[in-house]
Structure formats: structure tokens, C-alpha cells
Length: 234
Image 1 (cartoon, rainbow, N blue to C red):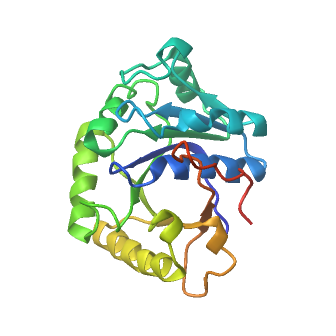
Image 2 (image 1 turned 60 degrees about the vertical axis):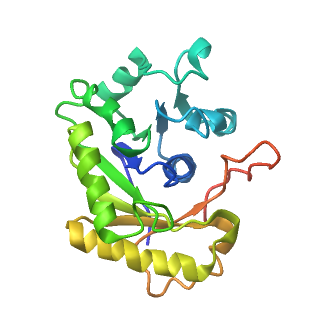
């Protein structure tokens, strides 16, 4: 199944759910399919592991990354640039917003209501059953409710990310898919896609997976590790 997204797509989720890795890899995937992609880093909560850490690799591929001003690049401050408002008022191709974790990070979206007025928007919640607070269906639904309240926007779809980094197995991905289906059904939301580490993509038995699968190449790594090469999934 092909993964196709366009318009304004906002990635939200619990802290540590993996939403930034997903935003980066989704941008690469859609760019490789010929879609013009702009990615805005709106993570104003976590000073580490933000989209901006992969900006050079993304820029080399031709993907436009919208960041805070250079002097505030490492600041943990609520900085929104006119460029963000501009890309929302006049979206083209795929406009991706990577938002900070939990309801605290989603608060920034309420401030963007005016430039997004009248636009078709998808707000996708990343759920990782291997993380605290989203390891149960009820926990995922509670997180959804708190994000929606602070963002003043409704979540429109689910992304399943049963990722344990280097320890992830095919069984973890399949169990995570089943869990994501349960959350999708309980919340009456579509399951837009699930993820898998790129190394597992060809080994994963996808016959019982009825949604697109996005391969992730890890970018946000500690200083003693090297990021994987950013190439589109196949």
C-alpha cells in the first residue's frame, strides 16, 4: 500500500513517541516521490533531538526546513517565525509540522489558528505502545484528549510506531500494528501508517498489515553514534 499525504500535516504525540524521527523520514519519503516538502520544527519543549538536528541532511536532499532564527537555534523558547505563518497561509505539496511532545508541546498550535483558518489539515497522533502513558488503549485516548484540548484542534488519524530502536524485532512491529488497530477502532480514527526500522522492512511479513509502512532511518542519535543515511524507503 502506498503512503500518500499532502496539504498541512501536523505530527503530535507523547514525549518520546518518536514523532520527530517520523517527521524527518516522512519528509524524505514524500520528497522522493516527487512531492514538494516543507518541514517546520515547532518543538518548543525538548531542547534535544529536534528536527533541526537533521537540517543539513534534509537540506542536501532539497527539503526546505523552517527553523527559529540562528541566534535562538538551541533555545528552549516559544519562538514562532513569520515564515511558519507564511507556509501555513500558502501551503503547497506537503507542509509538515513537527510539534513538541504531550499537551504542553501542542499548545503552540492554538497560536496558529489564524494562518490555518479554512485550510484542510491532518493532525496525526504518534502512538508507541513501548512508552509510558501510551502502553494501553485508554492511555492513548487520554493523551489524545489532552493534546486536542491544548491544541484546540481535533486529531484526525493515528501513526503506529512500535519502535525499540536497535532492539526492535519483526514481532514488535506486528504486535504494535495490532495495538494501533485497537486504538484506531476505539477512537474511531483511521490508522494512516505504521513504521519499521529500515533494516527490518524487507524481512517484515506484511501480508496481514493493511496500511502503509514507513521505513525509518534513525537520525536523532547520541554523539557517540552515527545517523543512518537518509534515503527513501522502498
